[in-house]
Amino acid sequence: MTNSDRRSDTLVLTTFTSKDASRRAPRRAQIHFVDAIRTDREEEDETAWNSVDVSWRALGLPEALLRGSFPFSISRSARDRQVMADLYEMMVSYKRTYTEAQFYFPSGIGGHLDHLLCRDVALELLRNDASAKVLFYEDAPYSWLRFLKKAHYRELGLRAGTHVSADHPGRHGIDLWQYLLRKDVPFPRGKKLFLAVHLGFLARAGRDWGGVLKAFRPNIATTVIDSEILARKRELVYHYRSQLPMLFGDAPDELLDKYLGCFGTETMIELVKGST
Image (cartoon, rainbow, N blue to C red; front, side):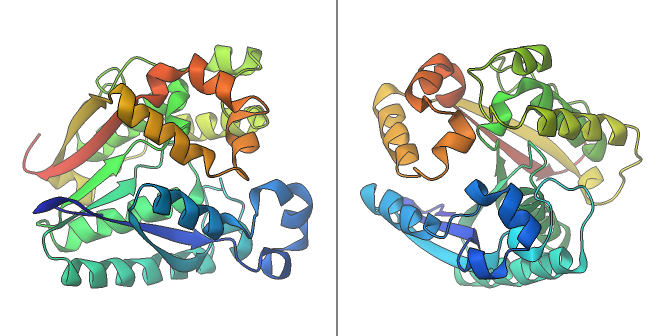
């Protein structure tokens, strides 16, 4: 979230928490996803954002595993719907407090349930107040998997009643066959999972979306960040040590060097009121 009048006035909101994971997570989740639930994530957040002098707050909502939900499930439980309602009320409150702020939400590339909940809250804000300044960012490193990104933009186009090309935000990325065959890729442990996510995107491709997005058109802006900002971004990522093996494997330095084009590219999607 940034104040449009002062570009340096930024507040990072960490929506979901892993606190009390050992007590609250379902036993099955603890067994199969133990490396994905880390109680020290808030400490990593604080250290990371303090290092770049950016304000940060934890909203304290339980992440998917702590709600008993599989994090990449396309179905949602009553607990998921309640969390979405709670997050929506929080965002409305922030919008009332920071009337000129721009809000940045994950766009949901990769199909992570918590990212999709954030995205849907943003869409609800637009549904109820078209003047809301809402932008979506490409979720990294999910967006590095080009086969997921293409499916995501195809879905976005269906929902907005227009055509959105995945080549528009950049041609960097990993195709499906490359992801399945190579070892040095993001999410090296998740190849079967993201193949299933991709198939889920394809299964939904023919759905008649309708609804809120038909009144909006997507504007997509891509920026290649300079070397100084890129170095700071890299340092920021390294503060999240508990998540590096899951995201980048055992050699994160080598993988970030290999996919520097992806890492150094930032894409924002703004939904603008008006016809396509």
